[in-house]
Image (cartoon, helix red, strand yellow):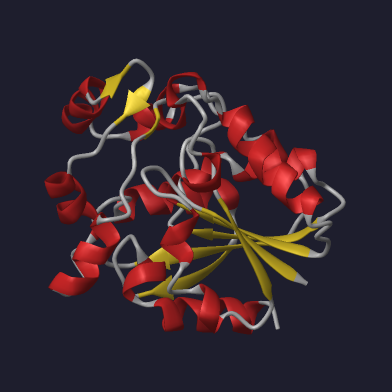
Length: 231
């Protein structure tokens, strides 16, 4: 069994650095196009299909099987595409405060209209840029100053497609067990939105009393959930 970890928008594979040492199984953290090992990709042209292809490439490159696919935040719209690409390799899905809007809609469609206009103005040439101050308010409410600084140092620009491209959730129709880790202090993907995602997916639900970046603010507690759920 292997954990394959998919980060959300504005981060790369290194957002999982604090979590990895606490996992009891082999783990692979994937960089989606435009950061880390795939920093050469043009974010203005990256699509959700490209993100899923990156995961497939890494999983097949290491010939991983019996995979537990872990998706955080905006990875909720990448995971179903991966399920369609790797149906024989994935045994279970874990979604950590993952964005799962209605099939065919945009992630932007699920955001409060006032916030949506601000986000849309932050997408220029297909690239989404978060300010450090804005990210601190949404992502670091449960962190001390040093931990927050470490998290914010890992911020990166991202593909606007994660927010503005219509999503394809058909992969979630596959009969694969899934668990949703509900983050009860999340100020980014807030309670109402998490509950909408849960209602759409009908997964098993586990509560964790953290903010949005649980893998950084509470890595041992998130790892304990993953290790317990998956042996």
